[in-house]
Amino acid sequence: MEFALSEEQQLMADAFTELMESRNWETYFNECDNSSEYPQEWVEAICELGFDRILLPEEYEGLGMGWVELTAAYEALGRAGGPTYVLYQLPGYESVIREGNQEQREKILANVGTGNQILNYAMTEPSAGSSWDDMQTTYTRRDGKVYLNGHKTFQTSSMKVPYMVVMARNCEDMSVYTEWFVDMSKEGITKEPLHKLGLRMDSCAELYFDNVELEESDLYGTEGNAFMRGIKDFDQERFLVALTNYGTAYCAFEDAARYANMRIQGGKPIARHQLTQLKFADMKIALTNMRNMLYEIAWKYDNGQLGRGDCSMAKYYCSQASAMVVDNALQILAGVGVTGEHRVQRFYRDLRVDRVSGGTDEMMILTAGRFALRDYQ
Image 1 (cartoon, helix red, strand yellow):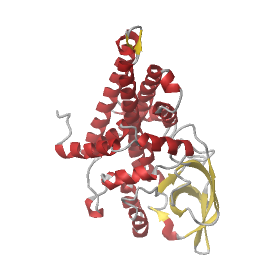
Image 2 (tube, rainbow, N blue to C red):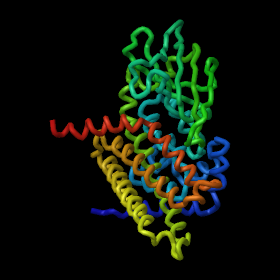
Image 3 (cartoon, rainbow, N blue to C red):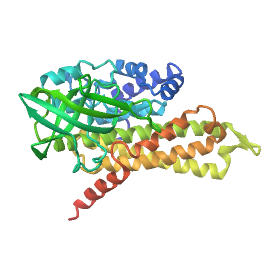
Image 4 (spheres, rainbow, N blue to C red):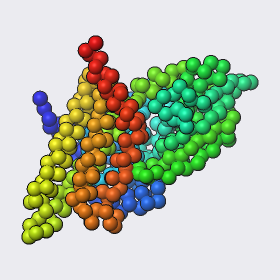
């Protein structure tokens, strides 16, 4: 059993670490977080190193690598404080290549290497979250056109991306769920930005579609295949959230460890007090468990052995474990952490949102539990 990265994998991870050490990125991240701006400059820099080409097949000028390499990249960037939650779209070309038509693929792949926000998926509605039974957004065919009507909520990246894949029901047969590739500059689309507790560098909005005119060529995938498309891609989304949680926790742990060895109380560093050491023991155990889980899942995916509940399990565990790590880190940093603009404050807010976004803790428990029992039926 080999736990080390290969030389090629380590060189890639080291390149991302060197980039993070090349300047004081935290000042920039703090500015972007305070102004709720996408960190375009940072994403461009990591894409210049090939981040968004890691999973892209070689025939599309990608690196053709796997989830293990992606995990190593997320670990390196997150450990250095990078807001990796803004990167969820960039490894997602597989869905576009699989589902999109030639024109759609060309529009998306034209942005490879730019760091631009390009695409996201609109499913959630005020009455349709974890369950889509009450989805109200519909599409209607009339006079050779398709008309989209409805309201989507909590839509990540939707203030910036030029395209959204919108799930809707066929008004003539509400049992048919289909996705449409929507140019967000079209008439009839209204965006209302939402303020978030955390994850502020990625926009969030209410979207309203009022008789938005589409062509049949805007169909994404095949008609009635929205559920199956979602199922295929949910695992990657949940895995990426778990990777972000782990990297964020790793950074908070190291910030707290450096401070604990420096801060003197009672004539000795607080790192030498037993209650502080208990916190570090708990944090280190959680980080070790997260890392082992994530690299194992990445290896399983790359070798065709991914289980149906694996990524839900990872998202649930990592969201909980990382929250504990960051909370302990903030407790150790004490006044330094809760005043000023220490980055652990940002981590604390971001991680709380991740227990909701990409699938709630409750849905991850149900999915992971269901598949954990399946082998014993």
